[in-house]
Image (tube, rainbow, N blue to C red; front, side, top):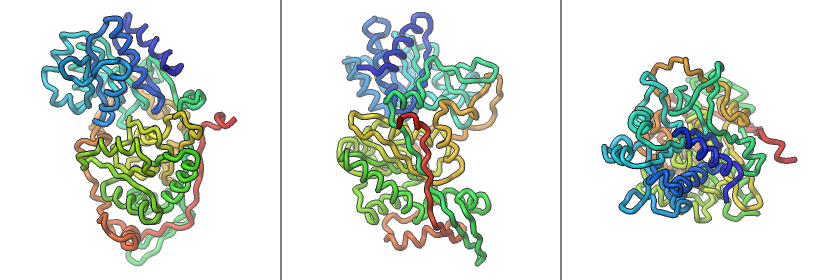
Length: 456
C-alpha cells in the first residue's frame, strides 16, 4: 500500500504525462521515491504507454536495490535480458553503453527513471559536465517519458541539475512535486533526526616547541594549519565520537535488538582505524566495506540482514542504499558539503514498523556541518537558489566518483597502518603530516533537533 504522498505524486506524474514527458520529484531521503517511481511504471505498463523501463542511479548497490523494487511492483523481470521489461544501470554505464541503448530508446516506448538526478547537471551547452551531457544529449529526446528523482535538488558546484526548471526572478528551483523532510517527519514517514555536535573547550598544538591554545575546533582550524582531516583522524576525537554513538546504539538495541550503526570514514586507512577502535576499545561487532572489496554488495546485503552492530564505509552507503535497521550514524568524513551531509543523514531516516524510530547522527563541530545541521528544515537552502540567467564557469568541484564506489581515489593524508596496536595509533594520531602535535581536551556536546513539533 502506498503512502499518501506516494499516491498523490504518482497521480500527478500520470496526469502530467498526458501532455508532457518530463517530471521532477523532490522527496527527502528515506521517503520512498523508488516505490513511487515503480508504481508509476506499473501503471504505464498496464495502460500500454510503455513497453520498457530504464533506471539510472549513482552506484551498483542502488541500481540493484532499484531493480528489486521495480521487479516486485511491476511483477516482471528488470534485468536487461531476453524476456525482461527493463534494466537498472549506473550513470557510469553511459560512458560505455554504446549505440544499443540508444537504439532501444528510439525504437520502443520507454520510461527512463533518473534516481538522484543531482549527479547530472546542465541547462545548456555551456554548463554541461560529462554526466549531464550524456544524459541530456542522448536520452532526453529519445525517451517516451523521463521521471527524475532527487532528495537534494542542488549541487555544491552550483551547476543546475538536468531537467530542473528555474522560473521566478529569485531563481527558486521549481519541481513538479515536493515532499520535504519537515512534512515527512510530521507524517511519520521519516524519523526525526537528532544531530549531536562534538566540540572541545580546550585544544592546543605544538609546532617547533611553541604551544598555542584554543577553545573550540573551529578556532583551532581557523587560526592554525590544522585541517579538519587532522581532527577526524585524531584518535582521541574518534574515541569521543564513537563512545557516545556506541552508548546510544546500546540504548536503542534494548528495544530493537538488531538496530545498527554506520560510520562514514574518509579513507580506507581511516576506516580500518575506526574499525579497530570499535572492536578493541568498545567490544563491538563490525563490518567494513570499501570500493576495494570485490564482494562489497554481498557485504552490504549481509549487514542488512544480520545482527552486526556497526558497518564502517567510505562512500559506499552514503546515498540511496536502503538499510532500514540503521539508526545511528557517525559522520567522520572529510567531505563537508551539504549535499553529502544530507545524503549520509538520509541513511538513518527510513521508518520501520518497529516502535523505536529514533535517528541519531554524531559529528564534530566543523563550521559547515554545524550550519547544515541548523537548517535541516529547509528543503533547498537559500545559498543554492540559482537563477537561470546565472553564468557558471569552471570545473566541477564534486565529480560523481566522490560519491560512488567506482574509481574512488584513496586520500593520502591519513595513511595509518591498520594493524598497529591501539597505543601506537594513539601516539601517531596526535601528529599531522607537518609534525604538529595536536591535543584535544574537555569534549562537550550540543544536540540539535530541528523538528520539535514531533515530540508534542
